[in-house]
Length: 430
Image (tube, rainbow, N blue to C red; front, side):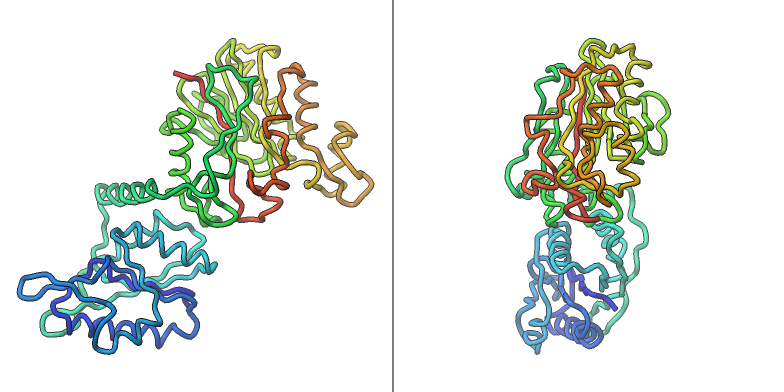
């Protein structure tokens, strides 16, 4: 049984006010009869007013008036916006506020493909949709199914995407201004930084507001993440059309840009100008690498598994092998991550960190010792030959625990599976 029911009357054209009301009464009564007892959200989507044609002229059919509609409409929430994108995004917010995921859409057959295309852009696999045909009236008050259009052309899809992009650009930033943390160790020939959670448009509490990753398991669609990324690119000054994120596998595989891209990797290196590479982080460490002498850079994602597997030095070694970098020239900056105050592992996993250095573990004799992945990363980098003063893991808010600072950072440890993501990024200026 659907948790939410949406009736699509957006732009519906009917031939008289009487028939308009007949159509609505029949549809709304059926929805109320079948769904009102269990559905937590009943909604009508329309464009300001419903329009109808009479003797070749258009007029408006007000939802709020006449023929017994008023009492019935009190059971439904009416969402009236000037565009499909605005309507569906508003409805999505209301669905998310109620934490619903099973949705029935009652839609005219000729609009079903269009509706599905909008839904594909604005929702993720978290949601389950089913569709039911909405009958429309013709002259004489007869009900007849309209012709179903099954194909959305590439041009129509691009117009849908443009409408959504335009709408999302108009939304105000949430939770404060966009903030980028930078390091004085990295010279100005690079564009770099670490994002925080403020200044974006993601509204779901654990993703609010500057979430930069979309997946099938989260409620933030790619369109919202892309708008957040567009705002970051404008603020930082990089080209978002040449932006590449790590495909995390919690390993030590590195993609050397220019070679064949692996299916998954936790590090990227490049010496291409104008290309921005990024490492994800939401407790795991996003690490940025820069060599101002050879003009090369890299990023790595270091969770506890990747840390022990040596993903940081694997990135360094890739830069040395591919671009001729020298250890003494490479600068490494560790982005915000979970601290030893909040991150624990079972003792059998913690033992590997203790063997690396006892200072990486607190309360080692407990069943779940506290782990310092930042200290472990620094130790491994120094042992690998990176100069201690070329590693920044403190100051500039870099050493703040992501779990302890919900005002600044996303955290998987704190927020659970539906967590937001920040990034560390770098590019060589063109």
